[in-house]
Length: 234
Ligand code: ATP
Image (cartoon, rainbow, N blue to C red; front, side, top):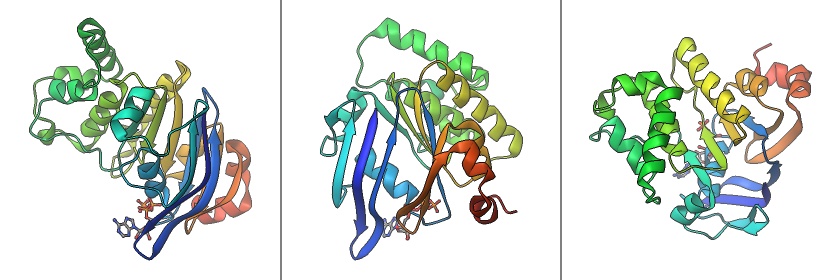
């Protein structure tokens, strides 16, 4: 579904992503793991066109999308849940969800998708009219995922959904991500929590200093001594 070849991202003279190549098959959950500053967020930002890549190709469903605008990517079925969530703090939960559907005009479909998001995250329904800025970090993460789902994506790009959250909240959020994946969503999951990411993914890529240094089935990466030592704290 997604084929990235030779992707490069630079900030001035700093090469954050140095020509990486990877792919995600339809229906897969794939983890991109790595330490702080490895270039994971820059990769997702380039894929979702929040910043311009310095080079490389991004093919999605057989089509080159490296130069499309962000709103065109949403229409193609690619949605990003950004690092730090990026909810609109002065808008209510419902208004945030509607923002996720801004490229749609099927009123009934939008209403039923809001119900679907509420069924995934009942906490959001209980607080439907609450301003997003007053939600807890975990609730904001639920809202950011719900908002992304409102565009009816085929490919979900998730940037560090576990960041800064208590273990119980992380568990809840990952349960929903896994259930969405089981329903057929393709997911590219960026995580610093390598153990968690590899446990829920089928395959993984390890990123170090802007390069992909290792790739394998997730269970093999979990058993790999190098990965265990560097990323699982063993
Ligand atoms: P983290 O898990 O900490 O978010 P990451 O793997 O997502 O790390 P990036 O955020 O992509 O890594 O950062 C990769 C490199 O690019 C780092 O060296 C970082 O300092 C640099 N970088 C990121 N954003 C910018 C920016 N806006 N301007 C300059 N350098 C940047």
